[in-house]
Length: 75
Image 1 (cartoon, one colour):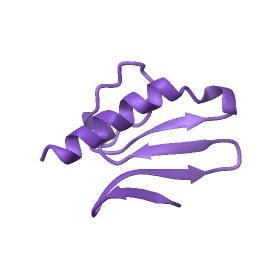
Image 2 (cartoon, helix red, strand yellow):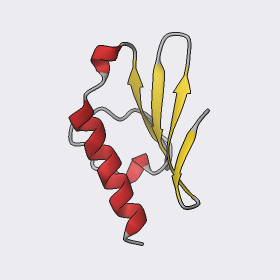
Image 3 (cartoon, one colour):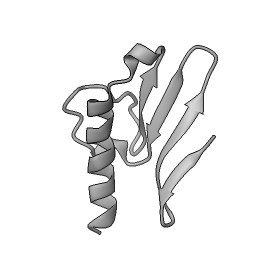
Image 4 (cartoon, rainbow, N blue to C red):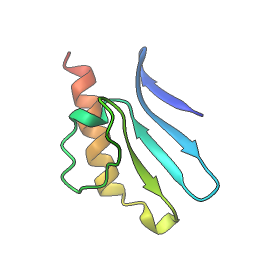
């Protein structure tokens, strides 16, 4: 499972399954999910599930990535 980090802080990872792909946000629980696309109930991690290429909305994903990077770089 590839994990993408900024310095030593994990940001996102990609997990492939038989029927879908998850884009996992390690600090997803603190993000503002304006589009309502994050799934999960844990204390930290949330994910976006893609079942087909049509599920990928670059604008919505970019918003979550931008928020994540902003939180990491302003510590």
